[in-house]
View 1 (cartoon, rainbow, N blue to C red):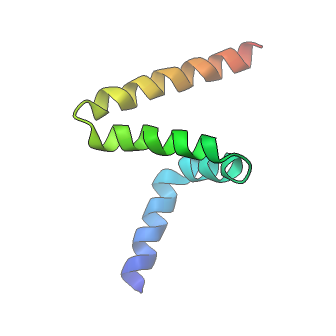
View 2 (view 1 turned 135 degrees about the vertical axis):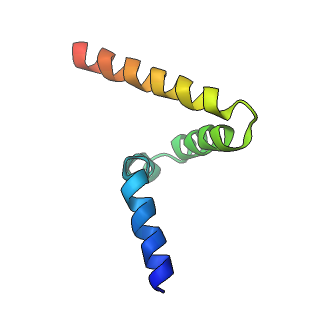
Amino acid sequence: MRLGVGHGIYCLGCCWALMLLLFSPGVMNLIVIVALMLWVLAEKLLPYGEQTARASGVVLLALAAWTAIT
């Protein structure tokens, strides 16, 4: 039980933003959850996953900048 709680706290600490992102649209739209799941799956399993993660970071930063401007 302690081991599971420790792993759960670690996962919550490092992935809280993804969990929040998955929870809020997930209650409303299954397509958003499927798209996010496929994106994370591509980052984890494909041979070019590191480049995919970097590309998603660049895209998210660009979207954040665009949102701040408008």
